[in-house]
Length: 114
Image 1 (cartoon, rainbow, N blue to C red):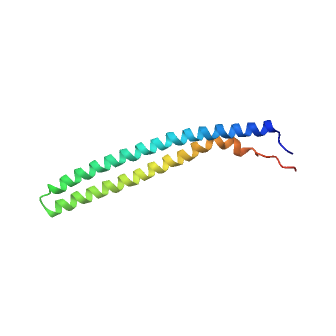
Image 2 (cartoon, rainbow, N blue to C red; image 1 turned 180 degrees about the vertical axis):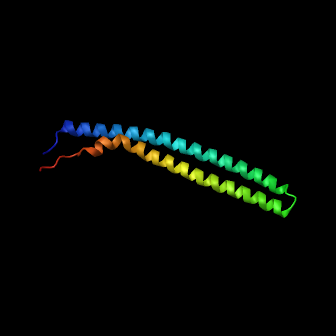
């Protein structure tokens, strides 16, 4: 069955509204991700600088190795935690960006003769 012009206009309008909602969500989520990455970068730099200062002040090789191992452990744990957090943010972004389209994908845009 052929759809009327009014039905096609409504579908187009609904799709445009869904796209705009999705774009708004993407924009907010992208900003949150960017802030998270900037915060992590700043923290990582500060920790690296502090570790270097301690390393330069080490009196023995053993002390230097201990400082380096401590820093590497902290840096690794921080990187894993950050990757997990970013993964969660990206997952949430995908879910939120899809929400406006759920209703559209649930219905068939065109009706085929049965």
